[in-house]
Length: 382
Image (cartoon, rainbow, N blue to C red):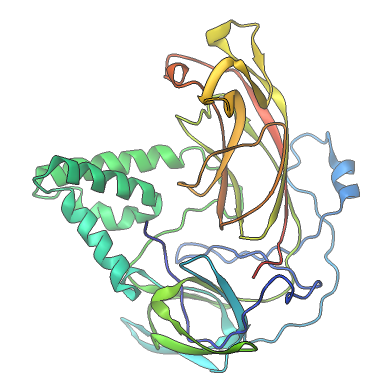
């Protein structure tokens, strides 16, 4: 419902799949005031993947990336709130960031990424404030709807809820505590070693990550013009979800990890620890076994699941099947032992095991795990 925003005064060129140069591929990295910019700089070949199979806990396979042509230092990419992406060269040489210690002038070629805060979008700020207010309202249905909406936003909104933990309104305080507890449970299974596994954090101010340090304050101007080969464009700060300055070619990403039997879709998802972008081609291969104890200790499921273990989604996703979703609120889809798709939205990829609802309670155990090989080929959809 509410998305985190990013913005800067830039002049850009709109790119589509046919316009993207074949030798320059990029993967957006989600950043925030508490995150460190990460640039993927490895290329993986199919031969390298095969050579590494069976080598214990090897998580990624990479080789030295090929040389690429240098990029214009003022070339940037913006992802808008509606899901579209525009990229190109900025005509302004610098931006201004007002902080509590004074105003800073930041050259465009020193920026790595930028994130508009909540206050840069009056609509977002107003909706968040309304949801928090509704938690203490007199209408039961209104309170429950606000509770669900805030949960859907995910742990990143925690900073905006914590000041209300001891609210004078008993109902609001109770709901806030329950939501924060749920956020704790959501983040328990995120692997710290995974790059990009960090949860985005919603803050009021804008964030600019430079090549030297991170700045938190207010970006100006709020509106900027974009030079496009399709004509002039005007971009509002409130319309931008995130942005980054391109610093080099992105490479194919390979990752290995496991999803344990306890990661049932009704309990908790396992983060793949990598953020995908719209247009990326995702290839997933899974193997392994999970013991389906409610049906007996000799009942074994593979990542494909089986109708004999009931259905998570009738006649579509059987019990025991490996499933995934993009982000914390994306549609859940079956992965099985083999699945390839092109991402329609950006977000962190999360996995779980489907289960018939009546057997998803804490009284049931499902020993075993599915081992996953994930390959992400950066897409050309800009």
